[in-house]
Amino acid sequence: MNNGRLVLVAMVFACAMTFIDQTIVAIAIPDIEKDLGLSDDASQWVVNGYLLALAALFAFGGKLGDVMGRRSMVTVGVIGFTLMSVLCGATPDGSIAETWIIVCRILQGAFAALLFPAAVGIVVDAFVANERGKALAIFFGVTGGLTAVGPFAGGYLVEWTWRSIFWINVPVAIIALILIHLSKPDNTKRPQKLDYSGTVLIAGAMGLVVLALQQATEWGWTSVQTIGCIVVGLILGAIFIKRELSIELPLLQLRIFKDRGFAADNMILALMSIAFVPFFLFASEYAQIALGQSASGAGEYIMYFFIGFVIAAQVGGRMLDEHGAKKPVLLGSVLSAVGFFMLAGRATDLDIGDQQWPLMIAGAGVGMILGPASTDALNRAAKTAYSEVTGITQTARNLGAALGLAVLSTILIDQLKTNTVDRLGALGVPRADALQVSRELTSGPGAAPSGGSAPSGEMMHAVQMAFAESMQLVFYIMAGVMASIYVIAQIWMVSGRAKSVVEAEAESAAAPDASPG
Image 1 (spheres, rainbow, N blue to C red):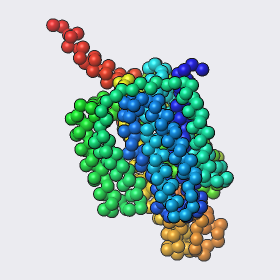
Image 2 (cartoon, one colour):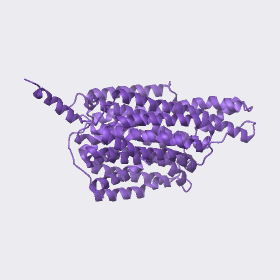
Image 3 (tube, rainbow, N blue to C red):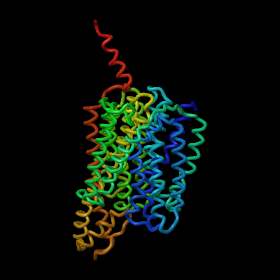
């Protein structure tokens, strides 16, 4: 194995934990809540605290990798993430449990934000431009696909103990550290004064906006808390942008957004994430509630999406190296839109067999988009800013995921109330009891309906159909979001291989000299 491939394998192992943990905990939440006696709000923060820290600190983590050395940041990230995983798994019983596990989850997210941008920068630097697409296709294909593995692995691990979903990170981290030591990836340090004021501004802006989106279904979209967080977050974001454009050594070189292709890549990644990350959580609930699957069965349902994702990611990487990012993104957006549309059409059949191909087609489309769009954005950056640019693209992805979870959750809850009342009402269940069933369903997978006078078999089928009809609308919206990527890619993406900002500026500077005198 040459050193580039060894570096690639090392970075895949280093990042594997961070992607699995984005979704694996959601599967274990009912067990964690029961065992530790957590409140509903605390349980929500066990999931959201991790994602919030990621969103708030990705930009800073990306810059830190370029300044302090990428290998150093990956190593610190792996060790810190693993330590927090061990502490999550060791959460004690009693009054301290809520604070303990939430703080450890937030710190997990913080270490992941240090780790991932530096790891991507290392992979990019280890391969020449015409091999980068295939290398990053493997990286994004495997790491992105591991988001789907979370529910699958979690379904089996929780049958032993929920604590094992955190402890499983320890052997993965040991392998990662050994591979990092053997491959000795780039650790060039580029010292410069860090923009701490900018860090506070962007962390505050992202943190408040994502917090508002995460809590919108609980607080209400028109509540003072939701609107206030969004408004203050946007104001901080505007101040951050103004500051970054006016100082010599900013946290983020926002001038790169002058590159039309880079701006398009980030819009595409944000839109893709509206469907991509929420899909795993919604699909897990759909499989357990509407299809009556166990947690492990829900993981197997999601695996069909993962199969399509991983295979198509490799095809997309090869297309990127040969033709640039636009062709695979266009093809991927069509495939994913068709896949989600077909999935929506079959959601009420309650038949897993009918949904296998739509799941694989939808996954294939997302797989063809993620790697090429991310790699194209990186190819437009200077060599010294790979981690910084990854911080930007990951911030876009996290913002899209938070928006998708918030909006689609609200739509699902509203639709479920209507459909549950209609379905159970037809069986003679009072409206108040039907609404209680709806609330139970949205509080976690596998909730059993309570109350009502209809036979349990008929009631269960009515509940399954109500949830399936609600998810049908969500899947149709996902199809529409992926179709919108086709429009943006067609209008804004640049055909052919990307040129970095440095190359473009060099050509622009040389142009007057080349003109006739």
